[in-house]
Length: 312
Image (cartoon, rainbow, N blue to C red):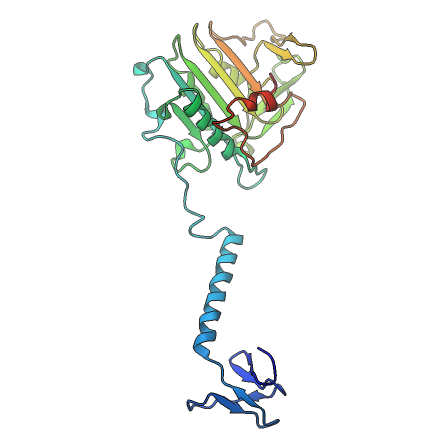
């Protein structure tokens, strides 16, 4: 507050609005106090009113600090699970009828190497499968760091287990989907079966300690078991993901033809057991993919993502 007819609040006391002399507030019910230096009459502030304002400001400051530090109780609450309970992992392959099954993985890597859009990617893909492609919630397994069940966190161990779940007990008529949104890395091929000399890998949340999941392991886990009449669509939104499934043929968009990607070693197997595997990748093996928080798929435009964002 300022002006000759108003006093200023300073810490726990007040000063004269004219000469800034510190004043002593009388204990009586007076509404004004006279400055002994300049004789200016100063109104006595309503401490209850200012106290309420101070408390309101203090609450705003606390909320701002909580938001910045990430300790806001409301924001720390776990979001709803994207998995229908009981977990799809508990289903028995012996009793599973032919149909549709999907594994969706989104990794944010909360500390180092953080990605912002992977959870949105998984949510959008899940919505697409349910609303447009006839998948049932109980047949969709989702792994993200937002899940509360330990087995649903996208660690290397859990991802490998979930890949086995996806194809276990598959039979003619099954339509399977594998979706991964996260980091991908290319590294030198140490097994001698890559035509370009590099192996492509996906990164689980614990890849810094447990290692990556290499393309050969992905191929042997979800491509080999595909029996006749089973179709797998793999969609990998990661860097260096062009041949991450290690399939025998890769479509060359520039020359509009299929290139031979069969292993150089005659002993290496890359083909399914009579089934069909189709892989859609965010980029070529020697390219990187961009991260975005903007939803890429919607129920109203379900197939734009294939046309605009994937290598076909």
